[in-house]
Image 1 (cartoon, rainbow, N blue to C red):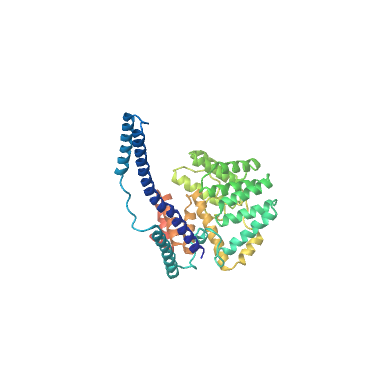
Image 2: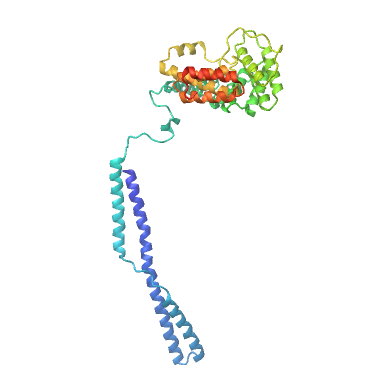
Length: 399
């Protein structure tokens, strides 16, 4: 009813504005008539004054000639077009048209309208809260609970770290950077918080080492010169600025300083060897012996310096229902995709991402990952062959 009332009010306002215009038409005609009468009266007065000798004959003739010219000028102006309908008739017609529009719109809405149709607002299009039953709704709710906890306990640095880690699992990297920054401000001597803040900032920037990220990494190194994540990304910064040799030297130095059981060493080693092969750099005798442990997840290193879930969180994940577990896996896959933007020269990482996309039922995203990887390894026939084999084995479209 509200829109109907508003429509009627607008139409009545329009009619109200039109009425004075209609009246002005008659006023203009009346004004033209009254002007001619005044001029004729002036002409008669001049003649009377000349006859009585008040005005000299020459002056009276000049005044009469002027008045006559004005009378003739008024007579030459075109008569305004006659209005076919009277003012009352036009007003009735306008009100009738308003009634027709309102009734027609009401009938059309009752016939075609869908009051229960979903909204096209950003919230309805998925940019707002997830509806109940959505696979990620419970995970989002858990993050919301942690956010509420931090509002109540804003001075808990470990709580901010857990919230930041949770944000990164669902791809909310900018918010993760902010939360890590709060944790670092509360515990200013913790290098891990600072380097994690820098990594989240890099991921939020699509792999670019921004000035904010550089500042976080340098603070981390000033607190702990051995912080592997900060050292790795500072080398990436050198590479992005064109200092390829300096970046390679720093990566090699990072590998040489790695503890024997460092979980990130295998990943960084594979990355360095791939970059060296692509750039035709001889690494003979420059790398330490390969670690015995498995290579960690692909992409910009999750160096192990900043732990992910605690033992309790792992146990809770094991008790998740399938929908929640699927949502968390999807978040991790998105994080892996973002990390590959930082370090695209990671063949195994791209292969894992392609397989994961297909497992999640995202063939279009898998095809896009395959194309991105193929562009990255365009100069290596062996790597391209491996990518084609992987894509074909899992049924990536157009592979």
